Amino acid sequence: MVPEISLQDRIYSARILNDPVRTAANTVEIAGSLGEEDMWLLAELLRADRDSDFRNLGADVSAAWFLQRIPTDATQWYPLLSTWLTALRDPADRHDAFEIVSSAITWRLRSERPACLNALGLGRVITELEHGSDEFDTDLSILLQAARYDFNFERIEQILNAVSEGTTNSSLYYRAMLQYSRLGRGKEVSLADVSAIADATESEKILSLLLHGLWFTAGAEWSSEMLKLCDRLIAINPHNAITYMRKAAAHRRKGDFSLAIAAINKAIAMHSPLDRETHADLKLERVTIATQQDEALRLSRVVEQSSNRLNGEIESRVTAADTRLTTRFTTLADQTDAQISDSLFKVVEILGIFTAIIGVVATTIGSQFGNSLSFWERAAILVLGGVVVIGFFFLLRFIVRPHRSPLAHRETE
Image 1 (tube, rainbow, N blue to C red):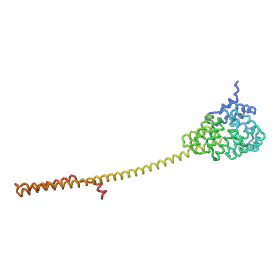
Image 2 (image 1 turned 30 degrees about the vertical axis):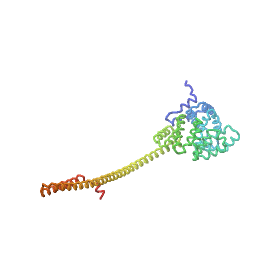
Image 3 (image 1 turned 180 degrees about the vertical axis):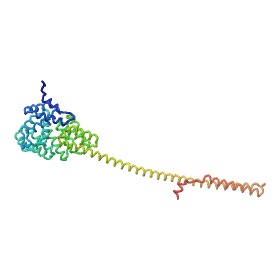
Image 4 (image 1 turned 180 degrees about the horizontal axis):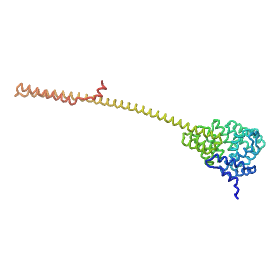
């Protein structure tokens, strides 16, 4: 005899890794086999077992079970849903099981039973508040979740204002919902306020709500906070494709396109294409990453080409300037050398003339004292002395005569 498998084990076994379609089919099959008593047992299991994977699979089973019982044309709220979800609320774990399951059910009602969901109006919630109904927080959360999935930020603030500020401040979930709406509307929100809520909880849905709000922001600072929340959420629930999509968006905004592509590919692989709306969002993010990456590469090439061209122009101008300066300095040096040489030549020329004069005088005097010499002998001595002196003068002038470089000559012309 085959032993009967417990409901808890059946739900755990529904997960087929890397096969979201079969996983979804398994949860629908389990839901179809459950009766109302089984659902009350499931509520107890979801409260007791705090494993995130079990709660998310149980949420999918619960959503499938209620959709199988709510008529497609239902225009009235399904009271059993409020009663059953209220049983999931547990202050000991800050209602984490309730938030996970109610979010999954609200998402399915929004797309497949919208008339039923719309029947849960703000008036009903206000009446429950006034009468102290146990189902007040349950229905309020569903109402807020429905507005969130429609990106109706003003509706969220309208609901929270209607139930009073005290109610909003009484729950981290409501406070996170308010921050989400403000971020979505582009209002000024302090990063410290967001971090204060995130640091005070380990709730998957509260962290996911804050991450969703940050998704509407821009800038590296917000992207870094998004990545921190993504890492925390992945540690809690590694099977949530939406977390990986938000992580891809954060990497994309920081320009880390390879990391963004890896994250979005993982999100697409783990999410069932049967959820067409979310699957379309995932594909859009993938296209956005590819487009921005191509644009970044194109801009990078343009910048590189411009930089190379500017560097070439700068180098050419610097080389030309260096050549001009070198030529100018060389010319000035040659001119200075020429001036010094001219001055030295003039000094030596004067000295040479002076020496020649002394030589002529000395020769003349010497010849006058040579009485034993004839006139012609004295004349020969004078001529020879004069030739020697004049020869010495021209030889000295030739040796010390400055020689200018052609460059200096051209500069002076």
